[in-house]
Image (tube, rainbow, N blue to C red; front, top):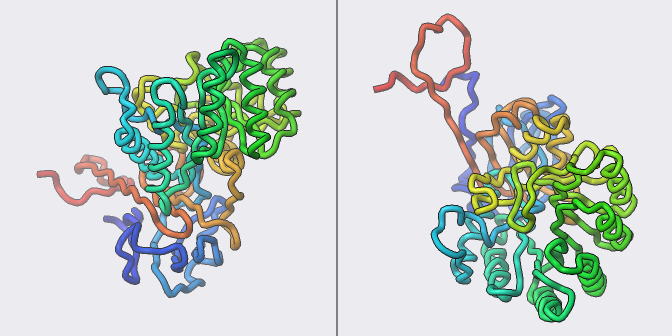
Length: 416
C-alpha cells in the first residue's frame, strides 16, 4: 500500500484487541489529526484524557494505537433509539416480545451503533399493553451486558395515562422507574387527552427527579405551547422529538412555537434519517428555524431496520451528513448535533479533545470534518479510555490507462 494511504490502525505493546485494556490502563493515540489542523498524540488514562501534545512528544507505558491519517473527534451519542424493535423489518408475522429475543435485538442494535461511534445511547421502550414490563426488563438486561462497551439508558413509554385506562398505564410507569428506567416519556399524541398525559409524565418525573423524553409530531401549535409552559424549569430537563410537524406549520406559527420551546429550555431531537414507530407522520423538524430561536437541537437515528424505516442505519455520522447536505448546517454544527448537543440532551458531561475531559472519542479516516462526514468508512471508537470497536475499509481499483496521474490508490496487485 503506498505511503500516502494510511494503514488500518494497529496497536503495539501487547494490546490484543478492544477487550484487552482496562479503564485504568494507559493508551496512547499516536498521530491524530484534530479539527484545527494540528497533528497530535493523545494519552488516555483512568477513563479520561491525560495529555495532548505534538506528535511524538508523549510517551505511555501501556498500549499505543497508530491513528495517523485519522481525524479525532468527541464521540457521538444516540439520543433516540428503539432497541426493542430494531432489526425486525424482515420478520414475518407479529413482532415477538420474547424476553430473550428483545434482549438480543437491543444488544445487537447497540453494538451496531457503537461500531458507528455512539458510546452512549438512549433507547425508548414501550411498557404496558401486550409486553407489560417484559420488554423493559430485557433492554435493562442488555444494558448490563453492554457495560464497559457503551452506556445504554432507557425511556419508559406507556401508551395511555388518562381516563380509566390510564390508571394501569400510570401504575406501569411507576413500576418501570422502580425497575431501572432512568427517563420517563411516551407519546402524548396517542392519548385521548394529550395535555393530561403530559401533566402525568411531568408530575411523576418531578417526583422521582427523572428527565422527560416525549414523542410528538408537534403539529398542533396550541398543544405544543401548553407543553412548553408546563415543562419550563423542570430539572433535569425535557426532550421532545421528532417534531416533524413543526416543519409543516406556517413559518410565523412555527417561529412562535420555537420561541416558546427555547424559553422553556426544551431540547428537540430531530430524526433526519427517517421517523420511528411512535409517530406516524414523517418529516424532519425545521432545524435552522429552531436553532435560530435558541432551541438546543440534537439529532438521533430513530428506527434501525424496523417497519418504520426498513433501511435505517442508526449511524450518527449519516445524521450529521444529512443535516449538512439537506438542512443547511455547516459540518461543525451538524456534527455537534450528534455529539456535544446529543450528549447534553442525555445529561452527559462535555467532551473535548483536551486534557481532563472524558475519553469518549471517535477517530475517522480523513483530515477534515466535511470529508469525514462524506466518506466516514474506517472508524476507531474509544469508550472510557479504551478501544471498544474498529471498522477498517479498504477500497481497491484495478489498473487503468490513467497511470500517469498521481491518484490515491489502495490496490494490492493485479486481479486474478
